[in-house]
Length: 200
Image 1 (cartoon, rainbow, N blue to C red):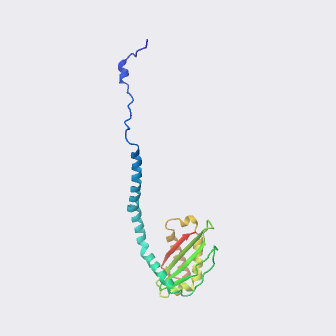
Image 2: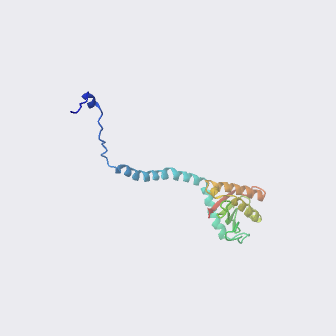
Image 3: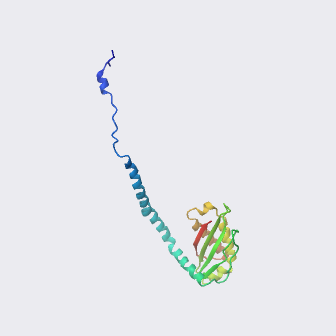
């Protein structure tokens, strides 16, 4: 004989496990991710990153465009002294001797030096300096070796991590303008425009 429970009503009130109704398609979350991720990426790019980059470039875009137009024009008219290149290969302080002056803009071509850490990495820059003095090109040319030396000293203090820091070009630009004006003995250099700023 089997024992019957004392209280049949208690047994009937116990909760019974319900079957899960998960009859939905398991591909719905996967499809949602596959569709939503590209849409979110596009939205972030179009509405956040592009406007941010445009506003960043709008501040210095006019000057960079002027420097880009002045550099080819200056080099096509020849250089006003100081020609020849210095150094070569992977030596510390190679390049930098070629420059072309045009009006109040002087272009320095491909200056390269080793970074502080790692020392096997090179930084290569090409830039133009601008001033409002009518004899600006002559003033810069007369002190060119000292300006090249100051440039190489400032660049060789950078590390690879420094070169990857946002805004490093502006920091280097400010350092170079300050050093150049000290060497030239007055506020002759008003702006500096990088046309190349790479590590190798």
